[in-house]
Amino acid sequence: MRTTESRERKLPVKAMELDEAIASFVHDGDTVALEGFSHLIPFAAGHEIIRQGRRHLTFCRMTPDLIADMLIAADCVDRLVCSFFASGSAGSLHEIRRRLERREPRPLAVEEYSHHAMVLRYHAGASRLPFMPIRSFAGSEIPGINPDIREVENPYGEGTVYVVPPLNPDVTVIHAQRADARGNAQIWGITGVQQEAVYAAKRVIVTVEEIVDDEVIRADPNRTLIPAHAVDAVCVVPRGAHPSYVQGTYDRDNAFYRMWPPLAKDPAALREWLDTHVRGTASHAEYLERIGEEHLRSLEVASRPSGAVDYGRRRAQA
Image (cartoon, rainbow, N blue to C red):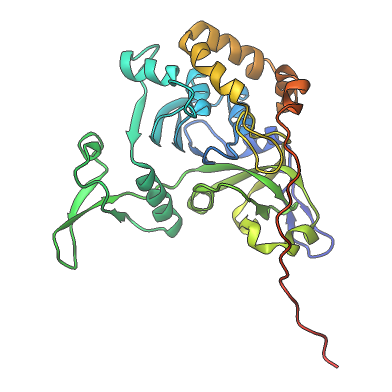
């Protein structure tokens, strides 16, 4: 890891290239969370995990969408921890279906929860709690297929309650609009469970559209969802969430999402796509070249700044 020192405050600068961050912090056999709820999905980091040939991962994600299909098809994942299988309302995740329904080309272990339960698992992991109670499994069939969802006596009376265990990934990766070089990352638009997943993890990689000066971060502190002390590496990866979207920068690539189900339905076509667009590229920049600059420019959004906020400051004493 390249760590230098800030001249001003002697605080560590954590900016590094994405390939270096994945090589340093993601290892075979790790439990890896890639979070971002429809928005800010860290696809570039997932592709780099495929390029580097990581194996035997436990992959954690709320709504395991296209990135899960890709990682599983690339044989990076042995176990999937998730809630709500979906491809962004564009069709089935055929690689996951093959492995679950027909065990082809090999079976996939799955640990399934609800969205709420996954949030609570991350929250328990971030809080270093042994479990988290949840009421919404009452009447559900999910506890019957997942022995880690357990019903316990309420220690304060009034019957029983379900509990879920903490989730503590070895590595959490998220994407954000911007950060400073020390890793203070700011997000606006839809947020998911990024903050909980970061605090629950042992190591954290944040990919961003841009690194900005400290003054930009300090000027709008409420947008700093992920503070620097929780981050091990921050990587500048423009368009790093494609084909998902980044609020204020580019829209979701709906054509890509519509393309995926018929492509992934054919195992040979899926692997050819991975070989051409991911394994056959040296970086995310080369992946974007395969997608095409003209198409990517069509996803850019017009500017619409929010209203200014005055945080105020103490007046100078006379």
